[in-house]
Image 1 (tube, rainbow, N blue to C red):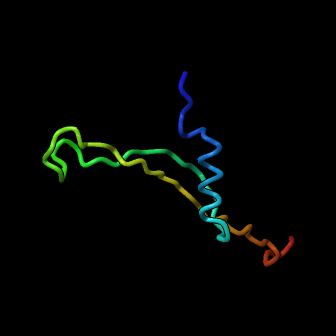
Image 2: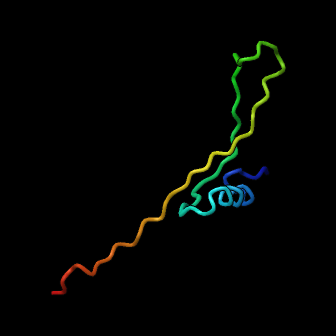
Length: 73
């Protein structure tokens, strides 16, 4: 059975390397294909090749709230 691109560890590592130095974390990365569809810019048939792209969803880690401002009863 074919491996899903959502489970691709190599793709996840490549996306993490691309945003290295930021405080963001990769949540999901998927390989997608961008095409012009059947009515593309080129009028010739046979030139409708899809361009490979990567779609990555990232998030910033939220700080843990401090409860030191609450009074103990």
